[in-house]
Image (cartoon, rainbow, N blue to C red):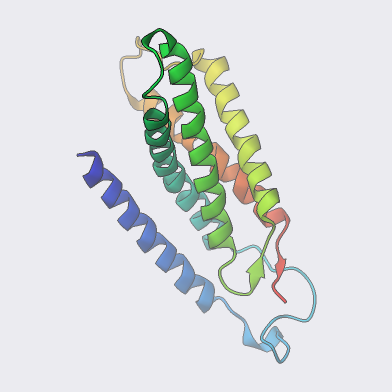
Length: 184
């Protein structure tokens, strides 16, 4: 079941990247460029379809990266003694969060670099790190680190999970787009 879900998510991400790439190519303005096809001056205009692609793609990649990181962390901690279960869970969770952060940063950077535009990967990762921190802080403040069991509907839980998953991608997208420039 998990493999089917991961396969569907990967397929949706690939289709999303293809759509974003085609939209980026269609948005090119040939009249404003020099002989190399790159504008002579200025910074690229923000295109909303690209920003949406960075956020959605980064969010999906982050979910996949989190579970892949947790898998790596679980395998890495299998030899720990049974009395270290709490430490083991902290390590597995930290490796999962790290995997998600790099998956988000890489996806946002890859989508942002489509065409003649580029940005800064360190800035993107700084934005993702701020988003992860905001997400963890929000979870701790609102739900004290866990989802409420007393909530009668699951709507609030899904909204919280969606916001938690999206904040790092939003932070990475903001940081990447703040550092955008033309590729030369």
